Amino acid sequence: MLLQVINLSCGYGSLEVVHGLSLHVCAGEIVGLLGANGAGKSSLLKAIVGLLPPWQGDVRVDGRQFRGQPAWRSISNSMVLVPEGKMIFADMTVHENLLMGGYHNPDRSLQLEIVLDRFPRLRERIKQLGGTLSGGEQQMLALGRALMARPRMLLLDEPSLGLAPLLVKEVFSEILKMKTLGVTVLLVEQNAVATLQIADRAYVMETGEITLEGAASDLLHNPEVKRAYLGKRRNEVWE
Amino acid sequence: MSIFDRRYEMMARDELRQMQLERLQALLVRLKRNVRRYREKIGDLRVASLADLARLPFTTPEDMAESFPYGMLAFPLREVIRLHSTVGPEGKPLVIGHTRNDLVQWSRLVARQLVAAGVTANDVIQICMGGYVYPGASGYVLGAELIEASVIAEEPCHMDYQLAMLQNYRPTILITTPTNALELARTIQQRRLDPQSLHLRTVLLSRPVEQETRAQLAAGLFAAVKCNFGLGEILDPGLCLECEAGQFHVPEDQFLAEACEGELVISTLAREAMPLLRYRTRVACELHHDQCACGRTGAVLKPGRRLDQRSCVNERPLYAAQVAAVLAHTKAAGHPFHLEAVDRRLVVSIEVTEGLFADTTQFIANLKPDIESEFLARLGIEAEVRFVEPRLRSKTRSET
Image 1 (tube, one colour):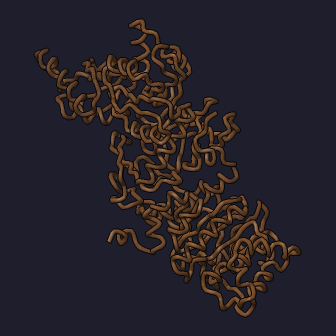
Image 2 (spheres, one colour):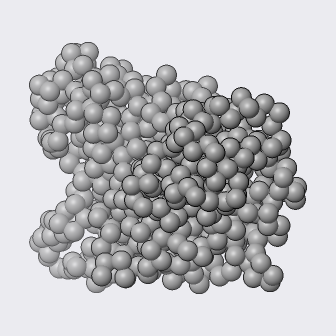
Image 3 (cartoon, rainbow over the protein chains, first blue to last red):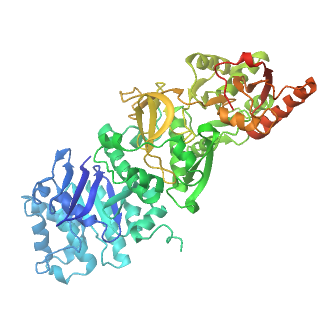
């Protein structure tokens, strides 16, 4: 197991938002984490990488304890978070954004070529300011910037957020290609159908707890998933 | 060595334990949200690790009987597309529901079992329970279809038809009950037929049998003998598979098995419609996790005897309370009786007390066929009624 989360709880102030949750991701997998707004998905990702201090539980990377280490350490564990809303540097060029992603990497010029080959659109816009890119291109830039760190694992927080359906398709096809690069992906999403179409396994999260886990193909037609990510009650789904 | 689902059947123990913890936590959440009985039982309990399992409450067959029919469903009935029933304590009915996804999982688990028994897409499978409507037969059909083996969808009742089908269709796999298999082997021997001419490669029995019976059947039917172990309340077949090394493996990605004071306790980790938490199966067992030569990592189970009063007649489960309920519809109502299973029949010995005694023997003579037809009609069991003197009471006597 590349990433192992055991009984993790975290929250803000006195409010617990993730309640003793466990999940794991094996090397080479794409694992989806689905849930409605406010289910605690992003908080969980922050707690995994150390941006949010966990209240209890364990995070293990390659079997080694990771919990309690500063967030920047996650890079040396080859685990990179692509945060919600892309968070690219709007006033920097595409080139500078990518270099920032490989800040700690001495071979970043080599990695830059690999990333630009992966995303030819970024090569076309290499000198353009990040903030002037379209939504889809910004998401590609965020993915490319993450790849600059030569990660073994990407934690993607809602990459489809704010994108038109066609662009969502494009971004998800890029995520699927991560597999061929040997990159493991934990994909946090509200877009259940798109996620389950590319993921190997998925977890469904509701109000800080996992309610379902299984192969993505099994969950695709599961009415419980619909209930969870639409936030509907059991008797409302059929209305 | 054939393994249907290498990812789950040969999963490393540490990953399996992690997956069990995740599924157990999710199970608790679903049970607390969707099943009132469990909400009351579980309260605020949480599990931080599998070691906390022991703190969780048990589910008993009595819980299931009290919740009959739909009280244990964790899904709306509309999404439950299959209902099976079995007999619970004191003969009370128990209902087990399955969603579409449950049936998909069931087919995969049975496919694991069939592949472990050497079944391939090239095989022809005859499922023949000797006239007994075995709910698990539909599970075998699902599993066989998944591995694309051919299934003969007929249930010949008479031994002549069974033999004719074995000769005409030339099935390579026979799924049957031990009682039926033994009768088939006897018939073949009596008619001086050559068992090799039947083309059978494997006989899969619906329940475990002694080594001696296995050897007898292997010689009598000229086929390898494999056994199933299942429980109607949980899953039958599919709860276990017998591997090439002759061990029963529990698919631990789906079931969490414990041996509590020698009793098999099962939690269903992935079932949707009717998940069960720490279900006391009333079956004695031994469990261990020693490495098996077959490479499967699921716990090895050695099922033992039943720990309740359930007996078995012609492969059907039977409780004394069911017999009393049948007798209650006859003039022998309320009379002490004792039971004995002989071959496929149930021998019911009823004590003739003053209430039953009449001055004509005709009364007793008429009562006998009445009771026997009542057994056939209500329980589907062939019964032989004997009237005995009260002094012949045995220790197995059941009071009505």
